[in-house]
Structure formats: C-alpha cells, structure tokens
Image (cartoon, rainbow, N blue to C red; front, side, top):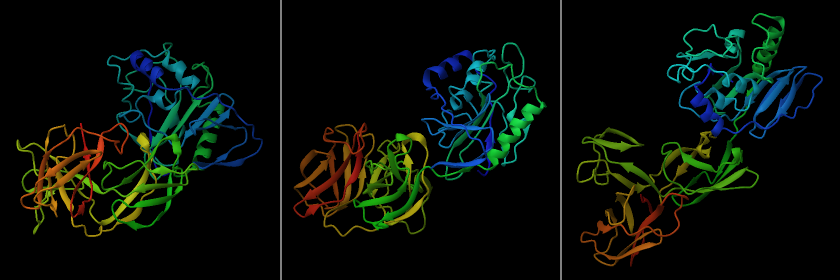
Amino acid sequence: MTKAQIAFCLGFSTALCAQQKSTSSLTPPLEPQARTRPHEFENQYLKIQILPGWTVATSADHTLNLIEGKYLLSINPMFVHASGIIGGRFSEIVSGKESIDAVMNHVDQPAGGFECAEWPPEELVVTKTMSLTTLYTDASKVNNGCTFPSSGRPVWFGSYFSGEGSENEYAVTFTYVTGDVNGLPMRGTLELKHVFTDVIQMLKSLQLKPPIVVSKLHPPSASPGATVTIYGSGFNALNQAVEVRFNDFPNNPMPAPIVATDGTSLTFQVPTSIDTISCPAGRIDVKGWCVPIPANHVDLNDCPPRRDGSANFCGIPMPPATYQISATAGSSGISSNSVLFTVTAPKPNPVSISLLYPNYLVSEGDTITVRGSGFTSSGNTIKIGSAVVTNLSSPDGKTITFQAPAPAGSSFIPGIRIYNASVSNADGQSNSISFDYR
C-alpha cells in the first residue's frame, strides 16, 4: 500500500440511509477461526501479519475480517466505490456492520442531507504511518454538518480507501461488533490505545496483490480479426464478465472474450475497427481527443461533420501499431496490469473500407456513406449483421451511399445492437467496421 485517502462520513439523512439499506446487501455472518500465535495470512488478494488475540474470518465478497473481542477490522481488496463523492455514502463501504447500522439509526438529519457525505472537504493523504486521531470521529469535530447519535455522546469508526496501484480500489474499515455505539472506551484509554496499536501494526504489514494479472499473450502480435490468448489469473474475479480493453480506445466495442473455467486464460478477437468523431475546423480526432491538424496531414478519410454541422461518428480500420491492453472485471473498474500487443497490418485486400459514417446511433433509413477502394460500378452488396443491401453502385469505385436497413442478426455485444458492416462484390469481401444502431 503506498498512499491512502482517509475518508469519514459522520452520518446520513434519513432518506439517504433508507436508500442505502434498500440497495446494499448485508455482509454474510462471520465465521472466525481462532489463532493462538502470530502468523502470516495470505490468499490470492493480499498478505498480512495477524497479531495474537485476533481471529480471522473471510466473507463471500473477498473481504478479510479480523476480530478481537468487539473490535472488527475489515479489508476489502477489491472495493468498488459506489458513490461519486470521495468518502461519501460511508455505509455503502461498511454495509452490514452492527456499529454503523446503530449509528445510522440515530442520525440527526442535517439541513441539506448531504453535509455528512461530503465531509471532510479536504482529502487527508497519509502513508502507512497512522495515528489514533485518523481513526477516531466524535461529535466534537467541527463543520461535519451532523450530530449523532441522538444522545450526543461520541462514537468512533473509520475507513480509508484508495484507487492507486495495480490493485485498483481497496477499502479498510475499522468498526466494532456491537450495537451499543456509546459503550466504547473514551479517547486516551489504555484499551483503545492497545487496539489502535494492533491495527496500525497489522496494516503496516498489509501487502495487496493485483486481483487480475496478465502474464503473457500468444501470439504477441496479430492482424485485425485474429484470435489471441491471454494467460494470467483472476479472469473470473468478482464473478463478472471480464473485458479486454485497448488502453488507447477504452470504449471501443469488442466481442466478449471466452474465459477459461479456472480463470487463468481467455481468448479475444483483435478488433477490426475503431470509432472516431468529427472535430471543429482545424482539428482531427486522435485517440478520442480533437487536436490541431499536423503538417502534411491528408484529410481524405477524416470523419466529416454532419450536414447541419453537428458532431458525426465514424468507423475506420484498426490502425496497425503497438498498443497497451488490459483485462477489466466488467463494470467494477478493477483492471489488470497493462501489456504490450502489436496490431499488424492486414493482408492487401482487393475490396476495402477506409471510412464509414455514421456508424453510431444509426436509425433505419439513415443515409450511410462508405469510402474505400475496389468498389465496382454496380453489383456491390452491403452486409450489416445478417441484414443485406444489394446491387449498390459506385460511380468512382471509391464511394457507396445507401440507406441503413433494419437491424437483423445477433449483436456481438449482448443487449446493444452492434454489428459488423462490410462490402462485397465480384472481386471479394472487404474488412469490417462496427455499426451501432440506436
């Protein structure tokens, strides 16, 4: 662990608390296994030194729970932050903890309902050196916007999380296994100092491991449309569908990879195209950014704006280059390390597409333009998924226009109508460009 962001929430409005309880699943009951001497605990996600007196329990969501009497230290090595507010919606992090539920049931609602979620306004960045004050909250703290419990007596619990490093986001919470939020020792007592000393010592020994690891690719280079195997571990992490992403084009549509049952390998298809956008005059799209047009640039296949001047969406062939790719566990945001992969130029094709527009948010009947080479004066066929438009002409052999047919066939991304579009004629079939219907 390098740096961590300390974040506290001192309470919630009744509405927010009710919303949380309706959307979060409770942590499964703890099943501690007693330990009688210091030892090192290690699994595929982390390694930590366990001090005498603390017992170990794991939960279904990969969280490691360390218990000493009524004190509970929870470490979630694959925390997925559920709020856009740093430190906000604290109970989403520690859902199902007795002490947190007890506090939330006695929150005095602040005026706006959000002050608690936004406190503190400043992020506190620390190293592994932790002090008692960083894991202590009470009603004496100023500008927190909340008073709790209703009795006004102090309570404490703490949490920090981080999105740094190959482990992505993780969360550590320190609570207690009791509903009596006012029955804890006060600040400065020997019991509290002893517990915090243990917690700090154990957290200093914590080593997080990347939950998803890419070790090698085979082959390390391939042309668009080829199948590649990624070897590593954790490709079945969080029981979510793992996606392969090109870091330069993170939102580029790709068919889902096929993941091995043991999560140690997956196969994916090198994308045949990428999406681009039109830019204001004097600029072109480079990796999703509109940048000034470089000198000697040929604009023949730049994405043109729509007739009304609004932004357009285009598809172009996957550019040959060396890219960084990674594996991501669905929508969790948890990703593997990045590795290099080279997309090689495809073999020359007598029929080819260099630009297709629009290729995103298309409706049936929209006018579509295809630019490329090898088109015949007549008899060209467009295929989009299993929909076919036949006998299209190309007076110059470089351009075809047609009306988008009704979507048909199986999308290569379930739930979204995305298909491959290609041109064919007597000379052969072209490369394919992704085509996305509304």
